[in-house]
Image 1 (cartoon, rainbow, N blue to C red):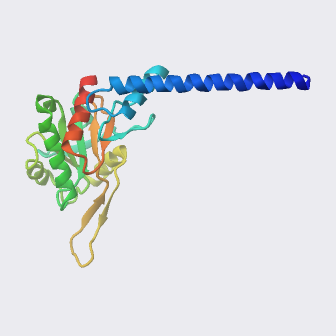
Image 2: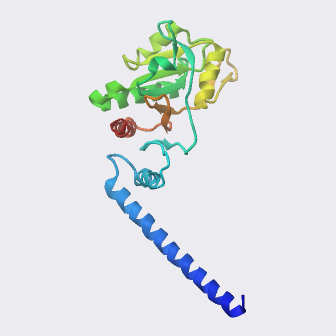
Image 3: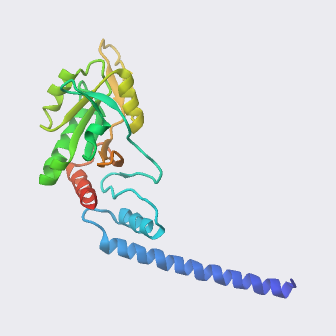
Length: 236
């Protein structure tokens, strides 16, 4: 190829790249506009944009998670577990099959964060009205040493009449925590003979298929959680 031909070829490539860049910008701008005007109630523009891109590419993106954390594609949370409910009955994930859940990991001796987040779950379900009756609130202890079925029964009854409390052996709790990637550790405050549990504090929305659809950070408002779950339940 002569220098003149090479220069002509380079000019054509630059022109092609420029045209492709302009078309890509126009396409993304169009998708953003569609996302803006076609987003679901309570859904952010960013979540709607990702959903539209997923539809164009054929990818399987998680449902919108307004007020929560969007799970990255390929990230899976949740899974099989064998635990004991507050009545002393052995249960597995199959007992909840087909039922959406709001799941929180904590412990009954928690001084502040756990009761706050469980109260948020209860308030979110109440804010959803009749639709909230489709969602089962679940509290899983990370302190099975003290949280017996009787202790769990007393504790969950303070927050919501349908809340399920789950405990089990240390090994069973560890398995469930690993499935949800929950961090927890026993800590003993200075000058205290008792211990507390340090733990992550996310609320998990689990779809009827047992897959975690979205996470909610600590201190997310009940209204934001209710809006997110309502949007996702209507899409199921």
